[in-house]
Length: 202
Image (cartoon, rainbow, N blue to C red; front, top):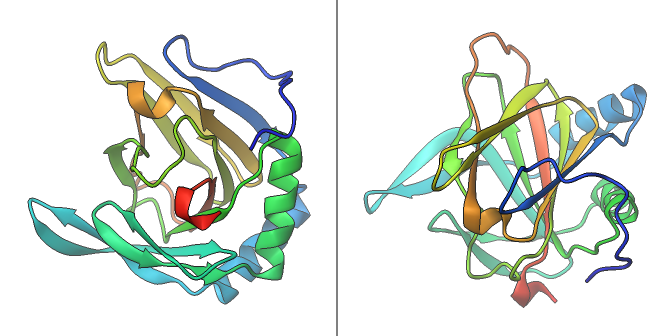
């Protein structure tokens, strides 16, 4: 649900989608504090995916939170939600204020180092509300985040540092892929929170 329509930020995609980079919305101290709390308190589980019809277990860890205990299918795997923690609700409120949009769930990813990443994909699951915003908040190590147009292969790259907020909306998931490339230079972990709007969670 849009809380207000005006957005003073410029669209960072050249065509066929909308991506808004807010920069850091947390101080360095706040970002480090939240990182430490989430690293220790979130109910992390190793991520799974389906590749060529076979379920594989990844090193990356994930967790899915929402107000209600429900099941959500992501990357071909069923995931069960956990009720919001105090810290997640604080971050959710901040992100909603910054983006002017409300969210009913959060998928968290834990990358232990640059050896772990995410290949090309789009977040276009049928459970997602059409053209709904996805707000991505980064904590921990700085990592590159890359968009690639599905047809002409044009690329747009961001370096996301601790406390940075990036928002995808409009037709972005239909027209663009995105990825988190691996990097041997990155030795420290990164936590990514993606605040989402899912039909069945309302």
